[in-house]
Image (cartoon, rainbow, N blue to C red):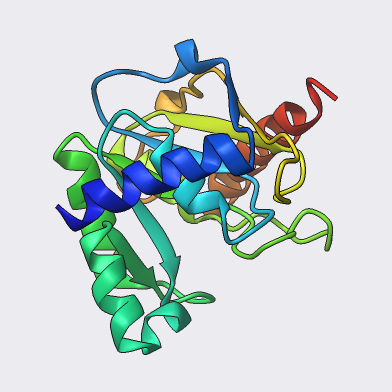
Length: 195
């Protein structure tokens, strides 16, 4: 109930304040598990993407956000779960794979931080690892526009990326780097496609 109310309010807020427009929505599967990956420009990115989705979506977020008791409670109600950045988080990994196995959507920001592309940061391998281990496609999303009141924001959804040729119980780092780069290259392309 809490999540339904929050999603409804954020959806209204998104369309009114950020004038959110969705492009390429036909590329988003209506059934089955997949990972959605987008560029990370603002703290508004996760709630806007979730509120614009028709399906249940889990979001991976940095553990530091869960230090506050209220935020921890609120995040849990909204299907946001913590991940320890900079190292292999087994608990988060197991939960993520469980989400995918149950046929849900997992939202990950490959940059690992806001404005990662602008800082010339390297894409993290988490999304690639989940895609190969969970054997699911990746839907790239390019967020265009500034998250400022009454500035238009566009969510540009790309076609599903199929990495089945790399499926493995233990993906090698070279493969993970390659898949991560392909995911990020597609996201970058989608951020520029309509500019």
